[in-house]
Amino acid sequence: MQERFVYLDNAAATRMDERVLEAMTPYFFDTFSVATSEFGYSLGIEARESLTEVREKLAGALGAKGEEFIFTSGSTESSNVAVKGVALALGEKKGKHIIISSIEDFPVLYSAQALEREGFRVTRLEMDGDGFINPDQLKSEIGDDTILVSIQHANQEIGTIQDIESIGQICRDKGVLFHTDATHSFCRVGLDVSKVPVDLVTVAAHTIHGPKGIGGLYIRQGTPLSKWMDGGFQEFNLRAGLENIPGAVGFTKAVELVTPEETDRLQQIRDRIINRALAGIPNTTLNGHRTQRLPQNAN
Image (tube, rainbow, N blue to C red):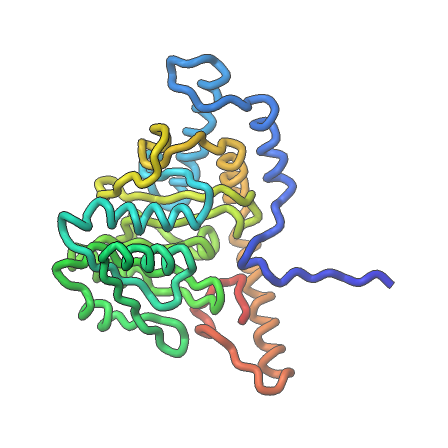
């Protein structure tokens, strides 16, 4: 009898959709060139036009403009660019205080630790029993030297979705930049940067059945951010290195394939798993908020 394999680690990585691979393939073998300027050769111009098109589509999924979105190698790099880029830009000008939550994912946690070794002060907000920060604590911790607040949109382990609109408004009122890691909520939980006061947003493809090794960072126009990796002048001179055009195309296709119907289906499966576990398995405890959680998360 053949065993049935059930994969339950989609928070770490999802299986790439075959339609995503199909969309990527021409950019490995046909339009394989680097993206050149409008004065370059025809294949490079075609690659540039494709990159511009998918950039605008991905930015649009966040309610942003194309010039506010850069491609990266994934969520780890995006969050590093955000946290360290702001620190480099404002550390000597305004202050060296950064606020994060105590349950941020590793890229933010370890970026903050690295900055502490460089003389920055980091405040880690405590969470309540459901995994929410205390807005009053955030208000009280922001000082004149605070340059950045970084709070996840949703936690990858317990699934709790933070009220980033309220958090962002606190930061906006205090004149502090706000970064959120939306790696696990992107396309599953609504986030429109034209309405939510957030300055930097981390996203990635590997959580929505896209390719690994491609991510992005939304940077609100006018946000001070220093380049911290030397090399070429790609990505509006904020991220050096040849663009991963096949990955960018695949990322965009993955976003296009996320539908409200699929998200609703995931939420129904989530609730069925949670309800059955709580009712049928002794001593079971639900981690995270019961309803304000990622549609694809059961813990």
